[in-house]
Image 1 (tube, chains in turn green, yellow):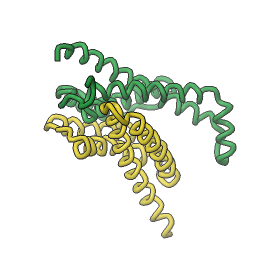
Image 2 (image 1 turned 90 degrees about the horizontal axis):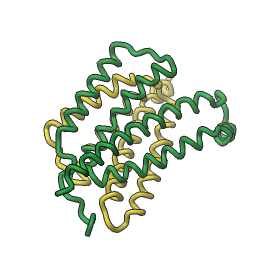
Image 3 (image 1 turned 120 degrees about the horizontal axis):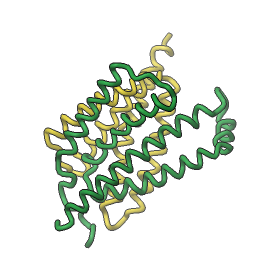
Image 4 (image 1 turned 180 degrees about the horizontal axis):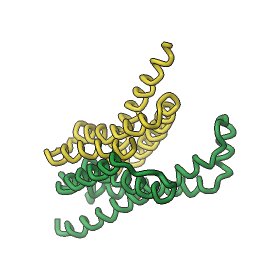
Length: 137
Length: 112
């Protein structure tokens, strides 16, 4: 394809955005759940969720995430794009340490290195094996 | 006694089930993204599956410790790649398999 380079850059932006949104969603989720009253019934939980305005933000993030992800999947194989989003494990881990004071031990550091190495290996492959049937037809 | 023995097993089964659902849901989203016709149908199915996944995973957290449930959640990377191969006919070379193995181990370590 002549627009191969352009689509590769678009893909990189899409994947970065997917990772960022995933990170924001997970951290916000953590924060929201922590703000819920402990050991309450389903009804009380639902009420608390509706009162917490951050849950609306969370729902918005999920929607944008879904839309962005569908765009990414137009440019990449699922087996290429999805493993790369595991980068959010690293960002969530690091940001949890910064924001919530969670400890990063040796095992977590080893995990971060493994994820980095794995993502690097996956990213070396071809993003899209076969042209999508139906696209542009 | 039986209850305390079987509850974790139920939890593990639920995590495996929700991982499998994640794989299938992602295949639905990919179908929605690449097909010209029936986009909405696949998208809707994918979203419904994600809701079921969340429900099953929440169920798993009732009977499983977070320190077990979170690392097991890394299994969804395996199910996504297996479903990509089986249902979408994506070819996965050696590097991608090795990378995936590293990711699964790494993700499990990070949340463990």
